Amino acid sequence: MIGKPAPDFTAQTESGTVSLSEFKGKKLVLYFYPKDDTPGCTVEARGFRDHHDALAAKNAVVLGVSKDSVKKHGTWREKECLPFSLVADDGSLCEKYGAWRLKTNYGREYMGIARITVLIDEAGVVTHVIDPVKTKGHAEQVLSLLG
Image (tube, rainbow, N blue to C red; front, side, top):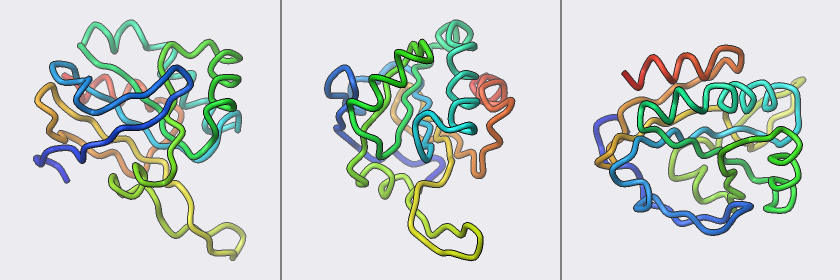
């Protein structure tokens, strides 16, 4: 995926519809996470929240993606004071970006969202894929990759 045009998308967030084309001229940090309001996902989201100004200074916009509902995203976004939108994915965005995978937990296999982050440049080209993601310090890692 690196060096290729990012897969196009149109998706719902808690604040309306977004499309990849809206972010032309900006860097896009597209981070995929399993579930709203869980420990690891909260650490990751708070990192992006706390570094929002530094990300914006690098011309970057953050979008979180999970399969939670628009309503749940809105509630969690408000609770955590997140300054970025959360995509309520029907599964298609996760599949396009390789985040929908076979996972294992306590010996049980199931399909779920892998915690990955895709960085897209101003022209819509994928520049980095962070896989796997360590939630603590992830926003700092993204900032360093944005240059």
